[in-house]
Image (tube, rainbow, N blue to C red; front, side, top):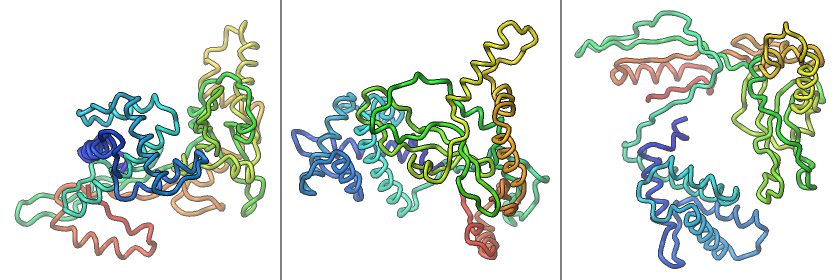
Length: 356
């Protein structure tokens, strides 16, 4: 998460450099970052304009400048990242992406320079889990002979699994039915999907949610139809899946729209039922609806969730749980020892040591 902690000293420094490069007098603009050219090329390519590379990049930078003018950021000297993000949110999606990725390229340069000089310090580290359990009391690893400061080890077990009732929290409110244009016909529906083919005698199940909901006459609507994926054993994936890939490998077994229709049906049936105490929109009630109307879905999800409740691969499923060690206190005097200890782990993914 440190890389995405934008409102930091590095983010503000990057924003100042970005403004200084793009917001120039007349038609003069310069590259805000060393490796921002792919961002500019992708912007021109997405608009289908055939230009020379140099001219295309110049036009993209001018577009970024005019977008900043439209967002009233040209004279902004506060270097507030929150203000910057709020202002660009009102721009067209294509212009948002251009400006934001140019800013990220500048931030990457600032971060690399700070790391090279030893100035960089990460402010936040991301630990992905839906549940964190402390398995024992803190262990004393070492004591600094000079200061007497202690080095402690806290052993944790991270659970990244998502139960069916938990994933239903991600089911948003029913959106208005919109007419689909030809370019939107291939966008998958939000809902539960089951793999078309078996892998090791099991069909994998997942919940896919549209990253962007289509709007009427939205020219900048995401043409790839990116979907945010959540699985019962590994939780929400950091990588989105395109609608084409999703529909090629999975089949829809329950859409969010159908789930809301079940909810409406239940509301109509329970209007005169005084014993109903749980609002039908709550995840607990949605779970009952799925168990009633789609028992196979409930069985498949619960089975994958429970069968992956381990620290190793079982039943062809990636494990839900993993060990995590948090070392606190005096660190520098034992850092070489920690590095040698981590190097003994057989798997590369386990040989990870972060100091924050």
